[in-house]
Length: 386
Image (tube, rainbow, N blue to C red; front, side, top):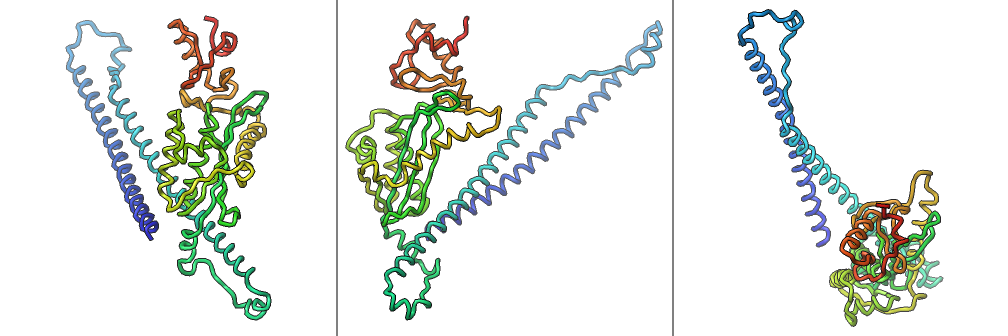
């Protein structure tokens, strides 16, 4: 009931925001039209005033050439720089309104898709429960009254109550792998999430590539867990058991080990925050073979990143996002540091190395805490001869 009320309130708020954005767009267009009209009127008045001033000038004693007499005085009006600024401002305002409207539409589409996923999830759980009840009915009783047995989906509130009482199982996996893509070594990462019912029947799955370089296994595993917890919350599950096969992350989650890296600590804090939203959330350490489906899903996410560039048309290349400048760059213009494997674009590496050399320091990997030194030969890929 609370979820329905929240959804209704959010929908009403979005409708109000859509109305405000539409009204603001109309006012902006009206202001732009008025500005253009006023500007045109000002220029016409300025032209008339200049022409009138020229007509009042005293004529010289010597008659000017015929070509000058016949030609009308020309006036060159220099454009005001404020016009360009105002036009740019109006354009930026219009783009900002369009961006907000697109974000609202995307969020509405996302909510509709999530609602569809929840309904599909509830229906699958209902079907599995009904199937189990049918299997438990003796054959003689089924022959007697089985044709009258029915439990339509959606009757009563049994589906939500049953889901809240049941303890679901969350399996997750984050993988980081070095792959060969077009004869180049590329570090790729992917996550897999599997949510199973109390008897280990798969009811929901996620496979997703992780974009970005410098990804460690700890970060990949933590992000996979966060993705799984968010999915469980989106499905409105209240009681879950989290199966973890990565011992360091398990120790982080239960609070026995403190993370040393700031990035990992942030991810672990996010995991703790999401855990508090469940009525029951119990992390358990299991063997890798017990991580149901998740390992294969994570591996499929990595394979998809390898096969898509190979199957793409000519001219398209694999791109990576540099974690320093956050720009998408062709993989062939990404530099991989020897020893640690951290990857950054040529432009960022060039600036990093030049600054270090300027201060008489030995250039090292830009990754925080990494001690790998850069060799002169390897830096020749992005350093110029100057």
